[in-house]
Image (cartoon, rainbow, N blue to C red; front, side, top):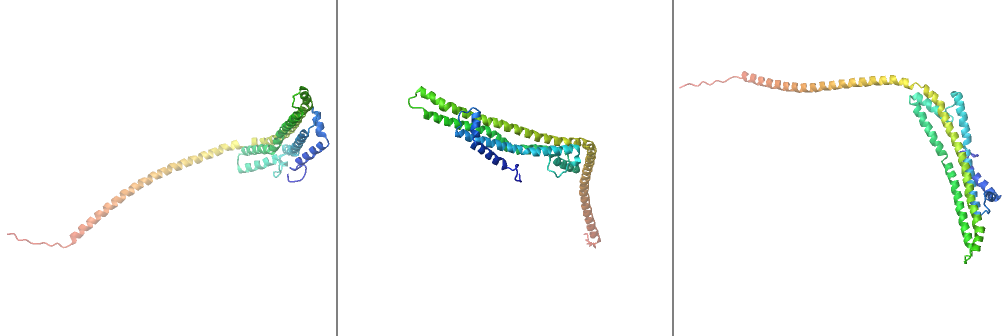
Length: 308
């Protein structure tokens, strides 16, 4: 978010740290551990529970940020159902974006149904990406609980080993179990119990918000289903198909004429070749006639020979 209010991205983690730190200083974290059955409140368990509370508060505040947007989208969809003219295309709402695309597709003669379907898919993808970090935080809550359990049990094992003496006295072993093992086990599983319970609450809040957002997307799509049903796209498709058929027939006729012209061109080429051969023959004949005429026009010399 660009403005510095409770919906700013830094607001949720800051409040989460402040609330969890205040609970730790006030002793509420230790009291919470003892409430779930822990007889002691080790420092490691209290620190992990404090971290779990901080993550939980951060996640819930991040999820709650979407509530005003859900209400705004619901109000815009309700206005569109009452009167589509009340929706302004320049508004940043689901119905406004669909109205703008619907008008542009109708003016351009495009498929309005395909355009609106693509817009709906983009909104679903944007919604999933918006809550990706929230889902990761919800998944991290039980993980932190298991980490706290492991740390508490590690401390328990160390204390139990220090309490035993080298003789292996059963009485000492039983006393160490009662003093170090059993109370620490209760504290260890108490951390996991708190983390699992908070993760369930956060997941429930996430499910409610996502259901509201999906309902808004579906309601915005439903507003324009009536207008899609009224579009005369299928009726206009028949004249368009007839026009396309006529164009195809014209193209086929032109193709036939072109092939006929090609045949005439080939015949003309053959005729031209024969004409050229005839012209060459006439030229040769004319040359021979000219030579013969020239020979006849020259004076002849006759020689008399006396016979003996």
